[in-house]
Image (tube, rainbow, N blue to C red):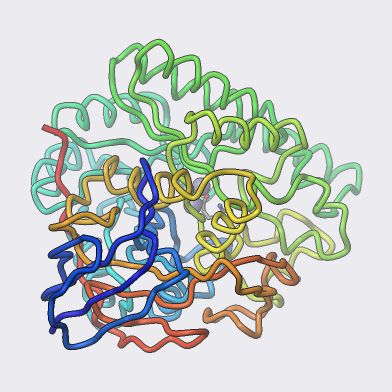
Length: 455
Ligand code: URP
Ligand code: ZN
Ligand code: ZN
């Protein structure tokens, strides 16, 4: 089966140029002007952009969390991904005491083999070293393509947090193996202190979710993680960066030559902490929370100047009735919001309106995630790479509504967002999986991506 995409404008992190793309057996096999190659199918992309499929390196599908399970199954979550131009997702399975990395990952793989509508990879969240066994097992797991691990510096009561010594052991081990440690940075003790105070004072609305974990609570943990990474000369990836002070510490460390990567999410670029004053503020509750305008401005600025490496979603939606558990007590709101279908259209809309370039969007949504996390065959429209391709219409206007999304949730923080320009088709390894508003793929066609470690 081969495919010829004709007359579109290919976007890479370095340039945009008009050329045809020929796909053979799921691989980009030729790129050139006016290619004269026969094809089983010809796609007219004249006037459209031809983009690499996005790689969302931060999702939580079917995740047990907050007293429930996140609303998207692997099937509905990857279906939504396909419809938002995402052709690879990374999931975050959470290892628990006594559990092995491969036992956990293999159990997730069994589900994804049947359900995945796009390709997938795993970072594994480590919550317990099992007396050191996990550090030994990491060698095998890295060989199996699990080349990144996550540490929560928060979620102490949920028994997901690791202490600083565990983080440092993991940083050192990851360095030996060419792997990468991802960190969710917030200070749990100060959060608990704030929560106890607010509850005692009867301050229970969603606004106090923000006030219990404001800028400086995240910044302390960002800086602590950077401090350990610098002093143990290890690489570090900070997930869902949302605050200016922590971001600035990362930028400084990067300028000093340390291998620090920064991810942020569309929700931090779009919303500020003001959303928690809204009547439906609980629907926006995620951790870390949206921050003030200064932090948002700093994130946009860092994106433009090259200090944000990746955009990912932290996709972790819950149903309205679950968010409602916290109507009168913000501590009962399951933390997390939707985003996997919105990330690429949102970032591309920002480019279409001239806020950033299209080249920057493909860099942070596709090329950098592929490079940083060892997806060697993904992330750009280049000969030899997987034909994960999005055709984008700069003129199409879409208003996001839960009604036209493809997830399982019953509400979205993106409701009513007007986007100028939208993906019209998504191809996964050369097969059409999204076509003008419809999912046209098949669950189970997504493949596990065995990632490479750093040499
Ligand atoms: O609120 C969030 N972000 N929920 C998902 C878990 C996490 O912290 O990433
Ligand atoms: Zn997190
Ligand atoms: Zn997350």
